Image (cartoon, rainbow, N blue to C red; front, side):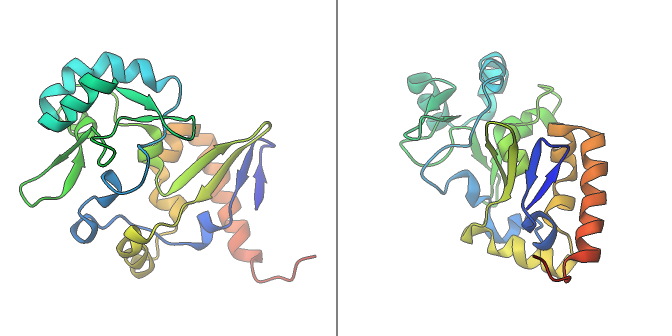
Length: 197
């Protein structure tokens, strides 16, 4: 574990593990697998409320029904704000292309220029999960078996987690953070085989 700027706790897995999404293999399973929706930050709730009318045409009928019944977001069993689910299963913001691969309707609307918000930051940052601690943001690599193809592709291409998520990390924490993160990654690479203690 590393500490950056006395504000961030960084798992060494961000540097040691490799990852590149492989949608051809997983078909976007992270949009429908799991017990909870995508974690949301408090300031994302009003954004979802604002963009809902603009993205409605991008949603499935089931997704619209879930949002109309439950709202654009819910508080899950862990007392965390998260995206609404369709009957406890897929994210309400899911849709599918002609090959049956899931995609985020919010992100599609963004790519089409309909809205200027990409998607929830927790989705953009995956497989990094952020845990808010009293004095730190703890950034951890969240290994999930449905992403085994992404791990294999990352190994093949030699792309560490932090580099795969460069855009997302800059979106969340800024360019200066990412420059320091790269410096830390280089330091880690140079010293990871040294004995500790």
